[in-house]
Image 1 (cartoon, helix red, strand yellow):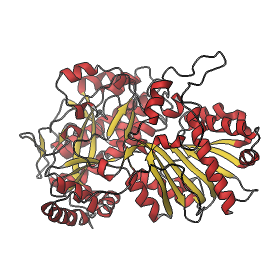
Image 2 (tube, helix red, strand yellow; image 1 turned 90 degrees about the horizontal axis):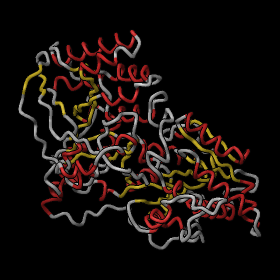
Image 3 (tube, one colour; image 1 turned 180 degrees about the vertical axis):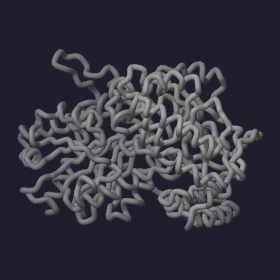
Image 4 (cartoon, rainbow, N blue to C red; image 1 turned 90 degrees about the vertical axis):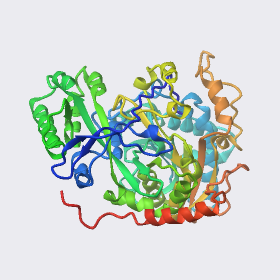
Length: 558
């Protein structure tokens, strides 16, 4: 659960006045383009370009997904990759605030999975039972779980001692800096714990297929994967966002004195190339960055004390091009065309939505890694119905820059509740966290194709079911002082139904007798019953258009 102390929305809900002519791609002043979108506040300074320039965009600028991946996970300057993230000051999560009890609940659920596998014969007594946690942050949940396992193993129940003897807990994180933090925190558990560098969007690069028996665990992980930002029009056409980084000339004059001459040459050469390609060489009071020069600039600035000031000086605009230019995205839209069509048919306005290919890859890769066992996903999100709901904000930013903002001024300025719940992904790049609601319906569908059976989906409070772990009293330290002053309000949030969910998937053949011990599951399906006859007919036409999205056989002439 990411909680901000103050929430800044710096929004640019207007379309830029740049239109590029096909002949020479000339910059012309035009009236702002008005998009009929139910959540238009998600757009940020859109630049409209002529169709003849669209294919060239990918050669110069990052997609929104690539931009997010860079500012979050680049090993030198990324918010997570560099270790800049603070798990106590920037935001906090349930495993931290409710520690160690949150981990105790998870340990109890995993123990019952282990016990079922032993009974079913899919885990022998001489085999390791691996808890593979992806995206483990600072290793807090691993610590709580392993402490609990050790504590229970000294009791009268011999099963816990057997469990403790078989458990191997491995933290997988793509940040070496965070790996070191996890390792230092849990080194007292000896050979029962390990921390390894791995990318959760490609588990099989680290874990060979069919080699794992146990549980793939994550808490608030898929929400942090990088996403494509997509505009779906009322008729079903799809466009994807690319990001255009830049610096005002006055800021560049200051920053250029901080970086090497090679970086200065690269930035200024790329600025000229962008102006020549898209603006017919017209001089602008803006220094444009390509993806390459954007990376080179931030890499060179990292050691400097002026890094944060320089990062905050960056400005960004968005360009939207046909989604067919990205084959993987086009394939996603085709696979889920009926769902998108139903949502668009209900409302005659278009929609900005987010596509999370990493979440699909995580589930697919985890399923392949498992020979037998479970995937336990704890995160905030919803089903298809919620993801495509009207006027719902699903992308947020958290961190020191946003925390320092004055929300009162924003509300006084006339922002709507939906706009307040959105964050600016371009404010303080590399200095904040970015998250997107998880689509659990999609995870279920992807999992079933990969040999996973959805066992349980419901409120996060179901982690407590059948465990005997109580949240009535805050844990205390050796001095008798509550470990977290926030414990009680968070404990109240934990037991109330809401957007925080637990999702359990079982690898086929693992244990036919296993049942998750909660009697209040939620539906993962999509409700299409509310469509009128006219809307159903409209959905058919929209689905045809979305199904026809395909990558062009050859790139258009430039």
